[in-house]
Image (tube, rainbow, N blue to C red; front, side, top):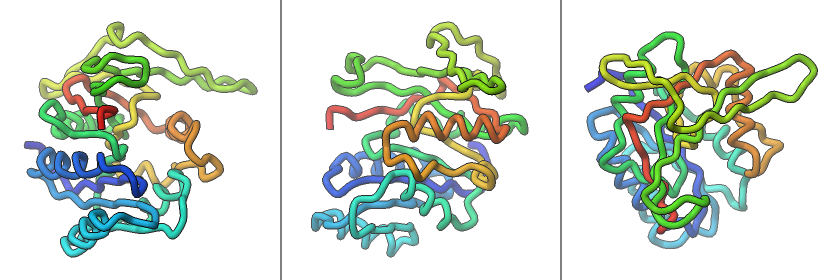
Length: 233
């Protein structure tokens, strides 16, 4: 097991997202060998089961903020980041993910042991029909970003099977700039980068990766960890 300081897991959800139960159970299992604190943002009105769940989580020392009305994911995530305690790593996940048996946090942490890599993603397995992919299919969807003077940045998609991987302590990885939504970041990334609060939802993902690239941070992804995207829920 990789020895590490604690991991903050940030989640923006909404009242009707029952899939959150699967995510939280999977986090409890997948990160059981690491110090972990949940940072969750949700909105009123909450169903009874969620209020009970959040009361239990806060009693265990996790952070939950309930907004009185719908809030942009960008605003909510920045607020969660501002509430971090001593955590050295931040794991950003969606509320319809599951960290199942193929997920490997140690593989991602191994990649981040390198000084020249600031954030790491894994690969996504689609569960249920959605996103134009069949259930069970894998998605890396990784790209390189090229900034050119006086021109919009170019995002160059590279086919999932065309990446050439390096290895560190037996873990495969490739440097990339734009990847899937599950991201493990070193805490220092947030000294210079936040989510763009002018964006409510659409485009926030690409904008965040562009901001990381512009700030000089280097990303990578590893195919040796796979999370589930639970469209079936």
